[in-house]
Image 1 (cartoon, rainbow, N blue to C red):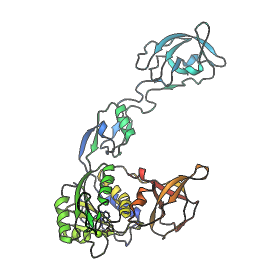
Image 2 (image 1 turned 60 degrees about the vertical axis):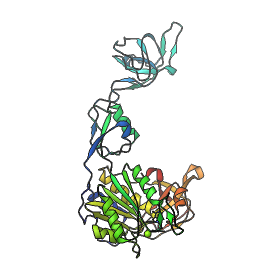
Image 3 (image 1 turned 90 degrees about the horizontal axis):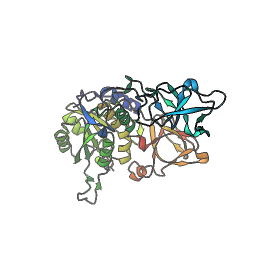
Image 4 (image 1 turned 90 degrees about the vertical axis):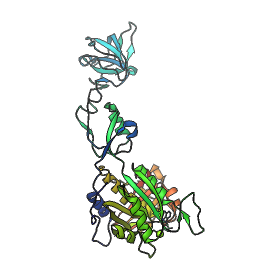
Length: 418
Ligand code: AMP
Ligand code: MG
């Protein structure tokens, strides 16, 4: 388990910027050192634990990039076309040990090994066969054309995958191209997830008239799974300090991270702060982010705790900026800063200086095919429909005070967040 000191998230300032928060997390959280080996088919989304050096060059042997005719480089026609005698036929997967003779060409197919001495391949579309059956190759092709030399993609010994890489399908493909059957990855980060609140009922349970069904817990568990975590669903804790503390203490053991939602504001019925203080240590971060409100950071028996706000949109946005970097740091993942892509704002907006804001928006094609962000018409942090009916978040930095239609803004697609 992650062992952190009690004061590791203490912060002096009154308001923390998003960058300060991410910086604090990534420098204070210790990466889990436990590894496991997984089959390639199970490696997607896991964090690579060791560098992978290429055990063989890619491609492993020099081969033809096209279907066509191979010749020696010195025979490539220069100035006028030239007729060649056909000698040999090499298929993909076939052997090519007979050298090409001067003035001869061999029929060759994509992926087939180049015969010794051959250096250039003419595409079959550029070639004609004359009345005597000779192969007429045109002039003007560069010697070496249409050939994939051994190691041109990756030379043998090159560090092709770095420890800390969160594996995507292309990384798995590369490991397979090296002939690996499995990869050493960091074991899954174990996260305990709790909702809090007397007004929250679990789907499947009876709901009193004054209750709403728990949506955050399912959203957060799904987000954690997308980050490769092993999630323990620990249900709903009631708004009462002692039972909250008992619940957290009892179920939090054996996890690398404790995640709660709700009860972290400073109202009389927000008990997460006091509960955590009674069994561990806690700081409340007031983050300069909207939607957001306070986020609680704490340590219980050396295990980090993050208390997200209860409003679904605030919970979503703070997950992205606080939980995501924490999980990545726990897994020893290379940093994956979010990179908003520039789009044109199709809305006007005013905001406070010094605070980062995220505006829920849909994308559409505007004039000349330019991507435009259309703001969701309503702003409440409790509106789940605003997340469901949009494509992502427009990021408005601390310095921005207003947005005018047509202005370039940064857009984070939901698809790229996790
Ligand atoms: P809180 O942060 O506890 O003050 O809650 C803020 C708002 O979010 C309240 O309207 C809660 O009812 C709502 N809320 C809290 N927890 C959840 C949850 N797990 N699912 C959906 N809404 C919630
Ligand atoms: Mg509450």
